[in-house]
Length: 604
Image 1 (cartoon, rainbow, N blue to C red):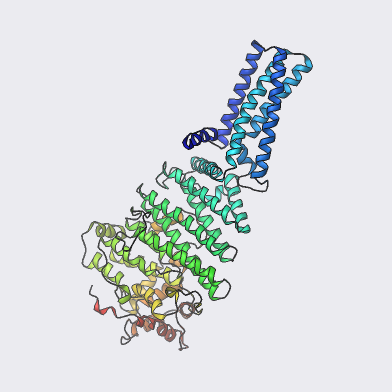
Image 2: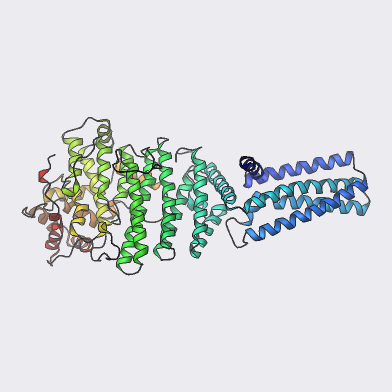
């Protein structure tokens, strides 16, 4: 019985949208014309026509009254989604009211002028309008159900996504979100955020999720040629950012905000996995990278606001924990050989398998100190070398230095290592890329001048110096130059223009194809103070007994104004120094690396 009713609903519902409405109206015109021809050829007797017309008009009035009552109880005229336009396109009220009114007028005119053919035409059209009204009434009744309304509106969104893809190779939210269906949808989402209406917000997010899910079966990637999956991906990021802003402003219940954040993030992770099945690795990585970056930004912002007493600890803790859990889920989806226990619904398909995809995701994952970042180097090592990393960074293992050794000094012949060398190029290109990675990490570290609130109760975000040293250690041990002069040459070379086929530039192109609000993708050349500190980090002594001569030589040769910008950055992200001179202060602050065990016990 349930399946029969579902089938009937589907047939009654049909497709909604401008194209379906246009086809329906063309069909109505053709039917009315045929009725007119038939009544002119063989008109019905006048008494019978008038009687049937009267019954039809009474039925028409009953349907109209019933539909108005259901509509008034189920919908609000102030609601933008679904608006009267979406409801009318699906229900077809204007169509059947127009047809029935036309029949009524034709019947009245026929009686007035004593024209039997007009009376017959009018009564027939009224009855036809009543049949349309019955279908429309059942549609209105079905829309009163939240589940059915969700299905119908998801279909409408899906049609809009598909229509946008047919008019543009890469439709964007900037282009389509300021008008029409998407504008009304986004406005309703924003209005629900203002009201803190978690129920409506879940329904709206669910509609996007359902529309995207139906599109996945027909499209496997954000490829050129107009993929309908591109627009819902940007829409999901837009909703995620609006949600984060509202939650950070304290305008949402923490539990509701976390549930919605998880719902949207799960949908994006699912999109990345499905896109990767179509061999579009870089675009799947771009989605995961953008999502990782936004989650880290949300957690970092929540921590900063809580430390400044501008956000309740309960809300901050919920956002930080939720963002960390979701980043952990992304990490497990990327890891070729994940450890630990998994839920049954976690995907077994790995969305990233190429060096370009790995870099596209990693450069976003390591930014913002709102969640642990160093753990990302473990799957990176295996993705790029084809071998699982056996050591522990917390114990001082120089994972990036060992990765470089496996790829170039003692070259591994695994398929992954060969592909990595082909993609990165020479060892100097590899070094340049990971220098850029360290710039992003350093520039977005938390403000060390703020104290982590004890009410958060999050050990991973404590002020313990070794935890900060842990985040810096992998790059500090990536030492491909040893002297101050080589450091200055590295700084000069990095300031030159990159080649178009540079892997870092390719990853930037992949990320730029998804316009997402929130933290921007910034090139390291725009973070010159972090670049100088990243080079200084590789010259800093790793052991308390090592001499800082080369570090001192590098810093002392820098332009004083440039050195002061580096000093301002170290004062923000590293513990305070007692020394007053910029060179001595930076050297003292980089001594935080001594909190980690020496890497000398690990052989390359």
